[in-house]
Each structure stands twice: as C-alpha cells, then as structure tokens.
Image (cartoon, rainbow, N blue to C red):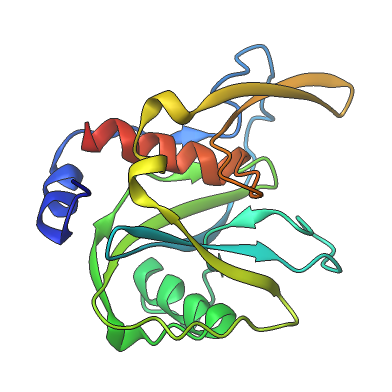
Length: 193
C-alpha cells in the first residue's frame, strides 16, 4: 500500500543525509570554496503517484531530462518551500493551494552548482496539470511504489568532462529518471523503508 501524507510525514522524521551528484564518485575532487546557488524542487505526491516533468528539448540546460518541478530560489521567495510552490505553479500549473507541504528532504548538491532543497508535498485535489511549453514538454506521474522500491534503482555511468561518472537511475516505462532526480528519490526511498 502506498504511503499517505501521514506516513510520508513520519518518513521525514527518520534520519536522512545530504547528497550530491558526486556520491558515487569519491575520486572526483570538488573545488574548495565553491559557491552553490540555492534552488528548490517540489517532490509532489498525488494519491499513489509522483508528479514529474520532462524538460523542453530546446532548453540550454538539461534539455529533455526528467525532473521535479522547480528551479532557482529568487530573492522575492520567502523560503525554499515558497520557491518550489511558485516554480510548480509556473511550470505545470499546480496551484499552491492544492499542495500540503509536508517538509524538506535532505539537501542535494548538483553537478551544475546548485544546492537544491527538495520539498515534499501532498496534493489533495484533482491535478489539472498544464505544462508551460517554454520550459516543460510533458508533466506526468509515476507510481510512488516504483520510486520507493530500492530494487528499482540501478547505478550507471557515463563520461563527464573526461572522467567516468556514476549515478543512480530509476527508469519507468519511456522515462529515463536519472542523476539528481533519481538520487533524491533514492534518499526518500531509504527513509520510507
């Protein structure tokens, strides 16, 4: 049985740990003194589904990749939660009033220089998602049971800046969920178990 809002809230009480896109690559040396830009994403659960997006293929950064709705924390955002809700509204038309914020998952450092705060939210109403064509090619759902099962995760690798880089994947149907998105989901799966 998929977790409801109460069991997801309880999972947030279990210890989690910060993650990075470099977790599986201890040989990579990160530049000391690097400054990370704040970002926030909405890990939105609706019924027994997780809401994800496929980024537009014409974008300069991460074209066509599967991602949570989210983006940079702007100066006018009161918090990472406010930024995640704003971005979800802008990208997929998800009204903030439909989202009960359950809490924050552990922060994640991305290879692109962001300190990403994943905000876990429960959507209690009909979705009616409307992808913003300039940013999002598709908004879709994946069964929560799929991304909460550690057996569905694999570690793959690819060449990045002349070095092999390993990363988590949790593919579903035609969707190749990998990198930061898969790593955050892996962290959630570890806390729910």
